Length: 521
Image (cartoon, rainbow, N blue to C red):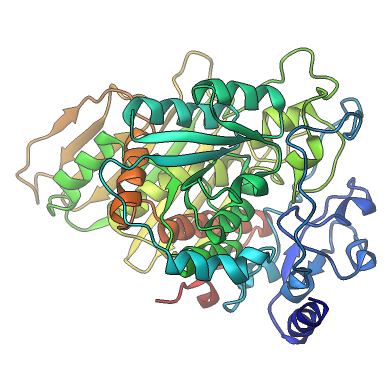
């Protein structure tokens, strides 16, 4: 074992590789970055290096070699429930502020990874990939898919209930994991009372009887957990965004390919019946003609903001706050962050990574787009002066080599009583095609350009829908091992498109696609 560790450290340090740059907010203590991501067996070579936290204008740089220097010894298994007194009991403190965030990164973070994995290395990277690739299961029609759920908050529980509804008898929840015991207990009830609870997601991944995993945690955990799950030989459903950074996305794609795993990303627009029918009837058929503009939007009076309920000024005893923070900056307990991570770039990404990605992905799907040539953006915190660091008004433009631009405009200032709306509108030589995500009475609307199209106008209503169809697609693809409708590559390109928009907003300048972000064939 010592010889192996020595070789790995030498290889890691001796390889010249691009760096991943992480922005550290001014009010995060220097000691906050000493802890590594809690993925399997990761060890930092020197805590001193991790304590070099500069001011906002500078950035701590961690090379892949620095992060990948590891020990292959398994960590001691953790208890399924928190040890009494082991968590921070600090009372509520003012949240993070300032538009400085790991999500927004820097030029160095944008450079990709030259094929080098930048996710924390684990024993599964060396052993799990070979095992999974050599032992692909042949599924029978009557075989039950055994699922573990990581993240059993509102979204995770909704996904569990939906799977119970659409696939009775086809699936079984055998394990659930969350940092909060109340939510774990709620998930066990949804699972029928038989699922085992875990505080440490790695223990769930070690189970041989888990075929597939749902990752429904806050966004800042998605990349790490997805790579670990794939390297453990599990098929994965991960909520959007799949990743925040190009290098993390490349790591997910490599892990999926190496382990021959099925990945579905929770961008449900590709499965919404009104979007699917509009695409088939007006785009795939050629009726829309040449499309030059895809306009996307989101309007709401609050966004995805949830107010912390009374009684959470102090952290509940059964909630492991340090595990919730995970790879993000370590800050004292803050109920506003826990209940509404959407407001904080370190944990979610706001309207760009959290909302725009849905409709940008729909534009990608409709028009078969992937790599933007460039992005420009504007916006800021114009109204909600509550300490958040995500804009409440934002607009960006993505330019594509297919001679089309995709725009996104969003605001959280809509007057009360006005319905939340999000959707896509195409402008083409054959007319205008408009589809709505939330106000499902509208479904889709086609208005012909009578100069070029003989197609009659149409306004089709649809009942509400969410992720039911892409969950169904995920289960079917687990059985036949074909590509999902929102596979890891689609998840990657939609994530990077929004990453470019976030970079453009941060830098207040045009961001151009870097060829290092291209995925290998």
